[in-house]
Image (cartoon, rainbow, N blue to C red; front, side, top):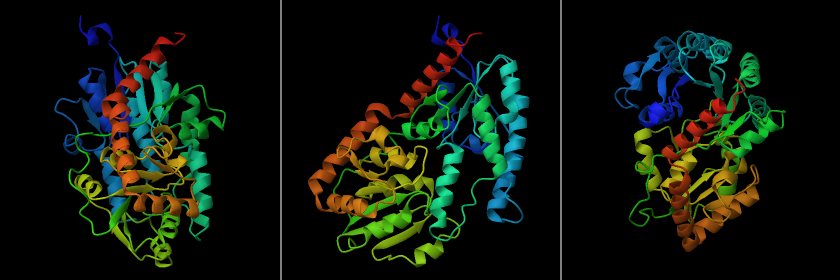
Length: 390
């Protein structure tokens, strides 16, 4: 009797986009546990990220609607309408002889009660902090620069809070994210499962740094949430010995902030193709992500897998993966002086920098492969069923 015959666990993944859901679906499929993947991606596009044979059903008209708005932002954002439509799509196609529905937050509400009525357990994937915490922190931080945080529709907040209430479990990637749920009275149903990284795609460079100056990189949205204003201020005075590269899309309205900051030694690269990211990380010497609010940024794991020492914040999930001064340095968010000192030390101490990079790679090899993430997820899903009173 093989593992699948002995343990006929079947799981549906439902995601209005891609995120890490495709990695999860891939791993479950390889182990024989995936019933189907539901996504807004067209099947032909999804197939580029998945092996042949992954069972899926798609709602490409919803993805098209999102992409058209991103290119031509006319009228209101379609996020709420897409979330509701995809929730109904999941309600129609997720139910069946399946044990667990894993649905992405904001777009699963309509499917929860039908799934539970059919005897399924429902896990809500929340890739960040509690949505109310996220909204409060970012609203306050954006206002410091005269900007309005326009990220979350009140009805989406209400949807997510209802999902948190109804779900059998909520999966979050870090202890920090979990703490924002616990602070709001949600603790018993949390699953804490940090993400993984492709250890073959992201690997250390073999030769010494090719850069005339040490290169510090920050990868992610260039804006308030990633702590970029505080990073720019912390970098001041280091341009003679280092250069700072900001890689990622520039947030709407943030160009005004950039124009008011000192950009000496700073290169705003903007968005790059995902295929180019491994080379960019290999070309770097230090990774810095001083985020104000996160789930568990994949760029942090990718940088560590690339052998880079990291400087980051507790809000980026650093306490889960980094021992202070071992794989990197953890500083409080918005603490410009502490961030400056960490950057300066890492730039100037080549031996410490090199040893941190080696330990960073070893740390992700130990516990942060996608295979380890899938194993933890399966154990959590199985535990839900085993511990069910039914």
